[in-house]
Image 1 (tube, helix red, strand yellow):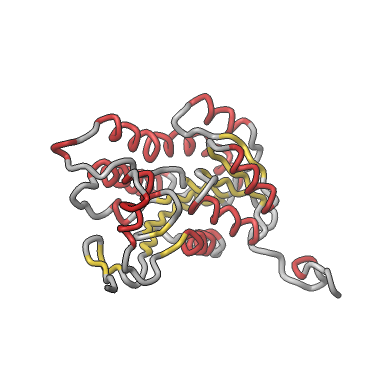
Image 2: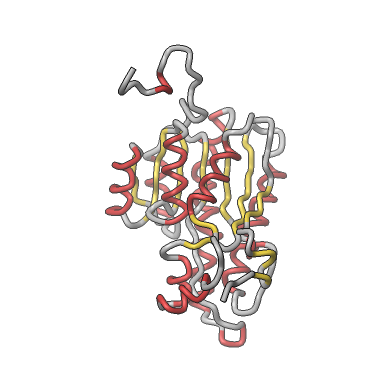
Length: 261
């Protein structure tokens, strides 16, 4: 019948996320926003968290999610966020970022501290706060969005690669510590992903940010990573995708990118 939702028609299969609650951090833009939208489309009840509440509320209204202010670098904010959520089946730790491209000899230690606080300590804060709820769900997914920078170092990237190496080892350690419990630990490691803000925040100018992707045919976009995350958390729960490395076809390695003239 016209206007009928096929997910609720007689005999139809339920959507993969129905009855499950997914929390997505860093959801005001980029990969976080795309992941929240994709999980909502898969039937999850989605809770989105970020500092920019105006953007967050706009996203939440458009996808039927719940928006809560969250600053992962602030323990009080993390505590209030966790207290406002009754159930968590999926936690997507996406909040993060890179803030400079300086060589170690010229290191800006404030930038290093910011990178570590957002990417590593912030992830630890929120994971620790929501882990009891994840354990209580009986079939939970704990997702870490790291980077290929978590496995490969490169010039000018030390503050970011060091932080993402920290996220990678955090995921590996938790997988060992939670072995035997009903919590899957999944790491998604994207390579070159073109978003509105990542390279701009890191390099400080639109021209420098555009140069990162210049000549690259079809860099990944946020929806590509959201698709990967949604796939991993909708597998049968005995199937754990430990680590998924995702690059565009044009990027063979951190230093090997095909560019058209």
